[in-house]
Length: 253
Image (cartoon, rainbow, N blue to C red; front, side):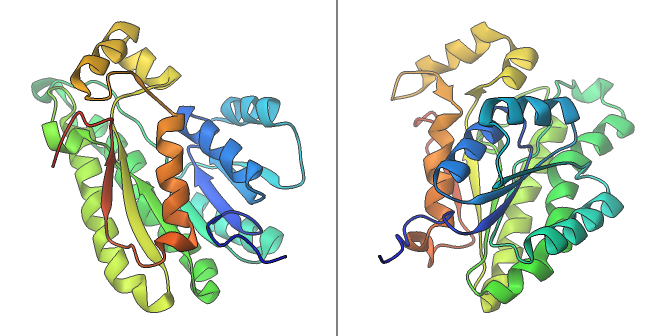
């Protein structure tokens, strides 16, 4: 039987950061359902335990507690993936942190923390894992951005700056990695109903965003998964250096 080349995960190994969060959980389900091997990464061990509780322990699910903003930790992860899997086909940089900070009260330490998790981690994870992706000849890197880069909401200067940096970094990487057959793209969700956004913004604010969308409903984590799966598939083999906004039409650009 001929493999379905539209399925980018089947028979392939994916590293997913922020795997224990709302979008990460849904992405993990999709990767395993599609027949892929998943190295699920999160700095929160309890989140990984919850992930295993939902997905069940299985041979194709490997969990690793890693601080993706730490250079040494990312290098150690790369060594582990090489020893355990031998190769890497897909990297999804999904780890994110979006606290509320008024600019005048924002400290440099807080700024650096947000930058480290949202932007530095994309550099560090890609830098460490690229040697495992290059030999494949059809590697896929998907970085998770944010539609907030378009409307730049108040009280998120550090987060918006970091996610804007992710777009620029991704485009530079797309230019450099194309010769290895690697595509690099960004998927930017709108405000999504996850435990994390509820904790930061509250359920009412998340629900109110539905009124700003032509599709007229609250965005959930599953809404983002299909776009990521497309970019990983062979159907998207000629798509690179792009940013795809997935927010139900709240922002046109």
